[in-house]
Image (cartoon, rainbow, N blue to C red; front, side):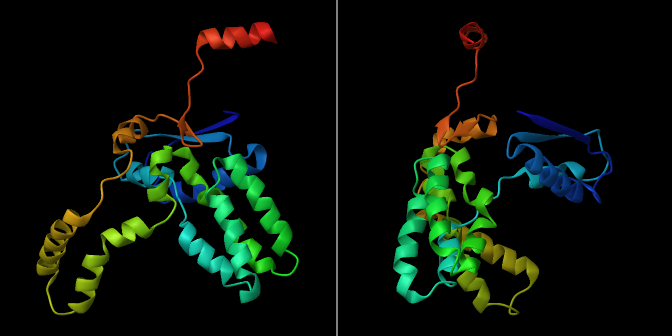
Length: 224
């Protein structure tokens, strides 16, 4: 880690989001993605800690929606080619391979269709966030379709009953619909690895990163 930023959270509700955004922007200009922001909860009486937890949650943009939005900026005559090239990006084996597939896409379409490449590039880091999770989870998190499917039953029913029920009866309706819908949900692939993520285990390109031991470090120093 090339850069570590440490900040306290005492009564910081009004400032923490702006600080996180500015600190992240400056850090990325200095060291790219090789930085960390450490928030220290100094027994703050407000909900600063809750906001900090929300801020550090990884943001994975949906590739299905992103692909559709990018194709909207392209004429139909080249959409098939562009869709195939986008497929090569999000199906790449690792982040470096995705970058290698991204560069030809930009080179091919930037001159004639700059908005298409700009729309893809503006969320680039978020689009590749899934590489920091176990490979078994990729199919679930690189698109929002699984979560949208899970709540489709609830959304369809509540849309029809809007304005016809009270808040308390609507909560009961949502609960019962969720209980009924979960019988058709598929189990998360690689669910047994959730404990590793909660424990803070790092993954690189879907594979658990091996921590450097003192022995490995000494061998590298001797070799140098």
